[in-house]
Image (cartoon, rainbow, N blue to C red; front, side, top):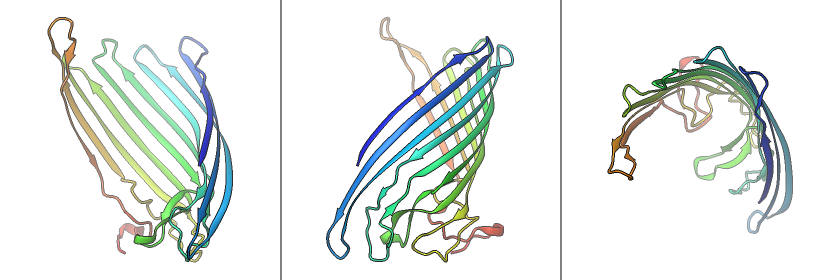
Length: 245
């Protein structure tokens, strides 16, 4: 695979309080594949995508700021690396994501506390997912996926040396339209997407020690993270509060 991209962002300070940040990215990728054996493949495909974004933030005062963002993402297609006779579609298409986010941030004037709260909603078309049996999984487009949630993050500095940081995340990522090119009769619409926990949390502490003159500081840090349960396969029945294989 050969990949090329060009991208850029602008930050326009429209007023003393309002910032506007547009951005644009161009992607181009060429993929070539060859396989000889029980299944023979010889092919070449190229992909291109344009991903715009637009962000804005407004300072309510010297400590509070609100922001909003619309962004898009692109992931090129290609050839699956695990080829089986059952896999009738040896290629997969690009994946496109459309994301909206809004939030509020706080920063104390003395720098003792920073915190942010944000909410997001995004839709991914032609979601790329490894499907198939456990030992013969291959990458294919699996339809449409929707993710929505909220994130809370903070950092406090009770003293000049002690820092406390943490965060919480609530997320719900599901198939809103499931499509499987190999087994078109199967429908997992409404199921959670594999490897997407609904709850995450983290907490960290750090403390600064001054070293000898000219040597700066030593800052040890300890932290822990938590991630809720996840499904490893999209076929697990999850509707109506039940979970069964």
